[in-house]
Length: 392
Image 1 (cartoon, rainbow, N blue to C red):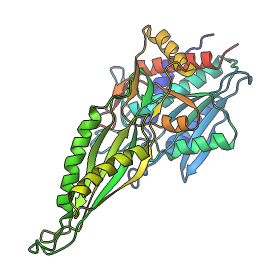
Image 2: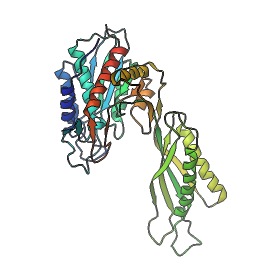
Image 3: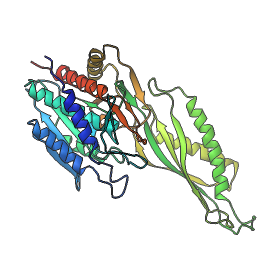
Image 4: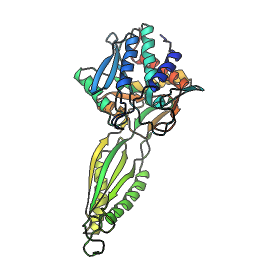
């Protein structure tokens, strides 16, 4: 059974979605948030005859879901995208949705309102074809991916509360129509060195926490190089670390009593938070052994797990075959360097694969998506639904 994807519908929906300001209100105080775009998506589902499920996460910030029920004897598949975007500082026309030379421009065009449009087009095509599926298809859009992933956490909780069994998921984050089977996680750590405050002239009394942190930074740089030499993940390469923030001292004429840095350690599926903390602690212990006056602590204050799925998993093979059929070539399997909501689905026991459109300007001053790739994404999703959920 084949279904027809409406290209004009995809273009119109992508433009309309881009024209709705949905900058994450946790990222930027006073930003629009996801209220208006959630309402729009709910209405789009209603217009095609699907009862929207509006699931409040916070005030005027709702997840929006839609369900096409199967006969009950097939796999249940979840499609997902996020509603929010990053900010628009530096953009000339962030909400234009302009169409030029097969590209749609504006904040969120690529990340990831075109994916929402593709998902809507698939649901519409299934409804219009009166397709009979063995398994259910869940359309899900969530808030807050760009900041704290509260929307995805809420979706997972909703599925558990309602005892909804999801067999697999397709996350439609941008991927250049490649099939993503893994991504890194991260750990945020704080390292503090303790000194002793004293007047800048009293060298016998002061202990400079900033100087001690300098030793830490030297060791962190060595550690960073050592990480890059480790045997990495087949799709993700080696782990990495960098120092995004540093703070220390109170004034020019005072020995600094404290210094703090924050570290971001990008992790692989084989690594744990405890392992990462232990490696940094070992580094600090070596410095303390060399100098009795050296005092430092390390604390992991936030983390997100990495994610990987077996490339031989049914959902990966389903999407891979659908992509090959649509593009007439074997798709690339790859791993992404950044973190995605797929890790939260994976933690809930839902096998998840990632595929999304082609474009550019993620979080940049000019963002765009290729229309052809959005249509192809919809075709891939539709074929994946028909195969995975089985049609009669």
